[in-house]
Image 1 (spheres, rainbow, N blue to C red):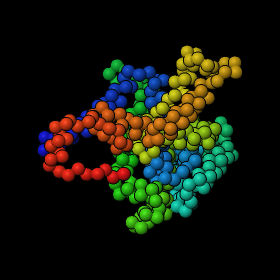
Image 2 (image 1 turned 90 degrees about the vertical axis):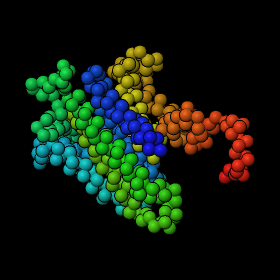
Image 3 (image 1 turned 60 degrees about the vertical axis):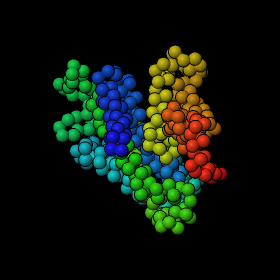
Image 4 (image 1 turned 180 degrees about the horizontal axis):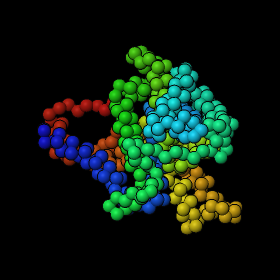
Length: 383
C-alpha cells in the first residue's frame, strides 16, 4: 500500500514538475513574439481564474471584469509613476491588487443581494462608468492616450531592458524574458491559491450556494457573506492580471478595458469549463493567442485580410472572434463542461474506466461477472 501511495505521489509530482521545467526553459528557445503571447496568456489566465471562481463556482454573472483589470493596471501606473506618489514599484503592484479588491468590496453589498441577470446588468454599469473615468481623469490616467508603465523593480532587479544587457547561458534576457518568469511566478501563486479555495471549505460552500441558495442557507452557509467574498477575491485576481498586463504592454490606454474585454473573459471560462482552474487557463490561452496568431499569419490564411490592407475583407481580430464564438456554440452543444471536461473524459476512456459523465469503460469479462453474481447480490443502479 505504501508503494502505491509513493507511486501516486511521484506521478502527481511529475504532472506539475515536468510542465514547470518546460515553461522555465522556453525563454531560451523562443523569440519575443511567442514570449509576448505567453505573457498575455498568463495575465489572461490569472483574470480568468478569478472570474471562474465568481461565475463558475459561486454562480454569479459578472460583466464588469474589465473594470477591475483597469483598476489594477492604472492603480499600479499611478502609484509607481509620475504624476503620482512615486512608490517603489513592488509596493505599488501589491497596493494595486489591494485597490482592485477594495473596489470589489465597495461593490460587494450589491453582489451580496443581487444575482443572475440583474447582477450582470449592475456590473455592466461598472465598465461604462470606469471607461468614462479613464477618459476624463487625465491627471491620473493620461486620458485617451493613456500612460506609460513604470518597469517593475524587485530587490534591485529590473523587469525591463537594462544597460548593460543581461545574458544567461549565452541568451540575452530582455524585457520579455524577464517578465516571463515574473508571469510564471504570479500564475503559480494564482493556480495553487485558487485550487486551495476550490478544494477547501470555501469552495464547497460556494458550490452549494451556486446549486441552491435555500439549501446552502439551511446548511449554515452565510449566503450574502460568501457571495460578497467571492466578488472581492475575483476582483483581486483581476487586479493582479491588470498589473501583469500593464507590465507586458508597457503602456495602458482606456479603450483596451472595454466591454469587449469582459466578453472575452466570459468566453474564456465557458470554453475552458466553468468552475475549473485548468479549464479557465486553457480557455484564456485559446482566446488570447488566437487573434495574435491570426494577425501574424493573416497573409497565409484564406478570407482573412492583413492588418491595414483596407480591402474590405475580414480582419484577423474579427475573424478570431467569429471562430471562438463558433467554439462557444459547439462546446455548449456537445461539451457543456468545456475543454477541461472533454479532456477528463478522454483520459478516462484511454485508461479504460468510466468517467464521471458516464462514458463506458471496457466491458467486464464473463468470468468476472459470474464470480460477482455468485458472491454478492446484484445492485440496481440509481436512475
